[in-house]
Length: 382
Image (cartoon, rainbow, N blue to C red; front, side, top):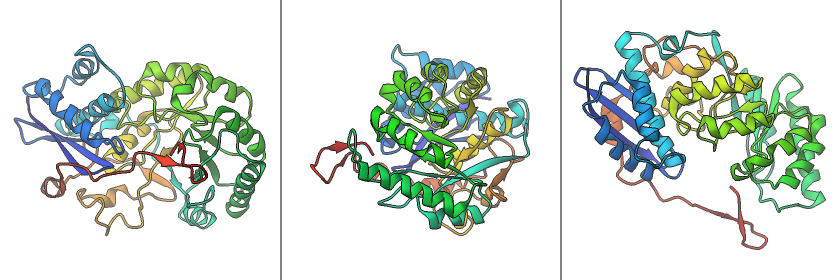
């Protein structure tokens, strides 16, 4: 078997699919979405295709080594995202060739279903009690919320009190049997995060995510040691070497993104590394069904996989248009907040290639690249 073509398809600014064709009737699919930067990733996929066409697709690790280490320069979200989509597609091909799900190639399933969490966000506050209550009614046992307002380096007592009050309201609304996670998105400074962690311990948060920006990862141990609240991070870390110091610092949840952090191959290795430090794997995935399917395959076979993020609206999945390029959407419906481990071959997806080609665009829609504080017009983190 030889690779005959490597193509990328920009569907939106948050959706970039990769297709690997072969000299047989088998095709592999992956998702290389880098939110707001899909154009550069598509260009890297095109350049990497020069190496891949004519190669044996079964040599996944060999190709991963060449694509991540070849050409002297390496790393970063653009190149890593391109490799991630290609890697997912190669694993999809491997499963299809052997007639098994990817999780069987990773050692087999260690669980019957993967725990999911959904987002309960609303503009202007930290968490939407109405949305959280709806998720809990659907069977979810964890919801994640995030502050949506600009925050100063050290903000006012009024801001802090409002955040605490809103989290207390959320806890009262959904009770103690549903976990609450908070994603700070690196919006807070280190001292602001320290204050937030101290003031919210009584709420019993499942974890606080990205309490500092990735460029400040060397300081995350200070926050870990300052609180009993579990700390999570990793959506903007792209390799084992970048996860090693934060795991040594004591984070509880490693959150690599399978569309950014080297695909299935590298995230499996990150999960194994996390286990050495008694940390859990909780993959980041605010993307589409292809990336989600890749996450589920890894979650199914990883002993220390804790919970899986998704932003997919499953109430509209079967009849909606957003994921219509996946024909077997009924196989991806959660049951009481868990996704039953899929049994389809490869990633378990039946992709409508014609629809993907029809929807593909040359250039992603324009997007806003920065956000400003309405109080003085200065730049603030998203």
